[in-house]
Length: 80
Image (cartoon, rainbow, N blue to C red; front, side, top):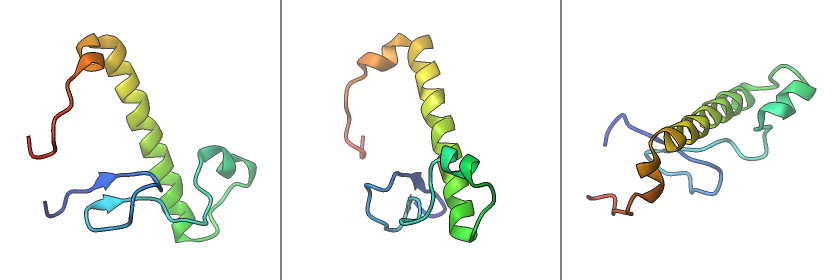
């Protein structure tokens, strides 16, 4: 799927269509609070990646509490 990406954590391989954080760079938001500012563009990317990932996880938590059917969803293959 051209132009579409999955936001993934560092456990996934870096490959086309998967956008993971840069390794060996600061990643979690509290790390940026201790030492503000970005040392390079990779840290900037990691900061926004971490912020977006937190927002997505929080949103799914809200949806699961609001729509309890999401807790009991069946697993389907990606092709389905």
